[in-house]
Image (cartoon, rainbow, N blue to C red; front, side):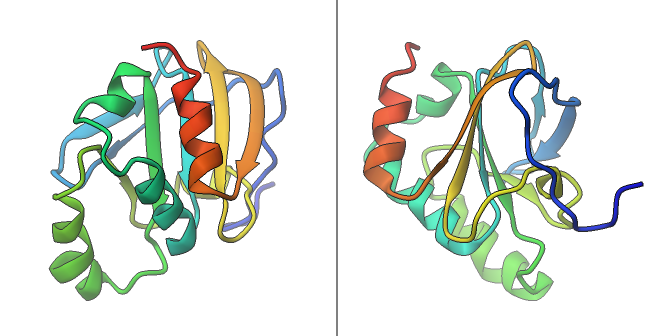
Length: 146
């Protein structure tokens, strides 16, 4: 039995269940067999790390690499999210899949202030890493061939 809010370690060789979330434009995105990399930020520091890594990257950069960025915004007050945070995200050149109630992000354990990198092949986990710098994330993304 899983306890609510308890994140599990993503094990190499395991298969992730598919899911769908909306981005900052209310467009649906799904974790499916075509997803090659899942980035998960469980807090604001992790999200800022992704933002810094993707600064000056062109629109479509993540999509070309079949990468999804999942941000857990469940701890953010709904009013702040609706009036300020999500509208500010509309200036980003990449989609941010918003987990407003931690229903999806809670499946992926990661440390505070880090980004969980999950490399996939048909939803099967090939590799996981926790990245703690924009440079490390940028290098990892650059190694993915579009």
